[in-house]
Length: 286
Ligand SMILES: Cc1ncc(COP(=O)(O)O)c(C=O)c1O
Image (cartoon, rainbow, N blue to C red; front, side, top):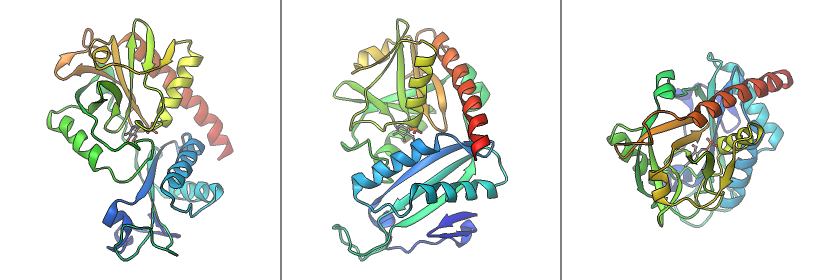
């Protein structure tokens, strides 16, 4: 079952008119929440980011926070798998094609839940590979927009190379990756670019920040030059579905000794512990 505009229905029956501005212009925003043992992880943070994205693109939020929670939990309860990825998007709605916003149109709301696919154990243990590219996306990468053609083109560069991610540089500085945030380790210090209009403020980025603080791992948010990434001791990518993944090959060259580093191993373990602890708490309150 999926949710479309107020109704739960089988996905085959979920239809959107061709004049939906999501279809015509990519005019909408989205979220993806990982769900472990039927408990959505960091749901409030994801809902807060959705509210920010909607406000940034001036789409009316169709539901209260409470209503969003209710829809998500109802959908999660209906799925066979315990671990899920809840995807939801809101578009500006259906209107005659015209760039300017239509008046009096209701947003289109679509929510679906699929089995959660985290990186397989072998990939976590051995580490993944990435290639690099120039970040040629727009200047509002902080909005979780459904217009993802820039990200898709960049992700395909790594897909074509058989790699897991494309790490991006704008004006010679690290921004993020095509579908994740990036952290690097230099001489025992964890580094990541500060939040700005050039990166998506990842929920996992915040979780890693909290983990680093709790685990007394030195952490600094600052501009990171391309050369610093290439000579890093460790490179990680983070996202709701990838969690934390070590990148051990960059543009075909090994990162340090080409194996997941000690800080990655620690952060990965802390992330799993953190998740288990939070989920026990959230499971009680759901
Ligand atoms: C471009 C981009 N950056 C960062 C992220 C990570 O965000 P989160 O940790 O909230 O999943 C994503 C997730 O899809 C993304 O698409």
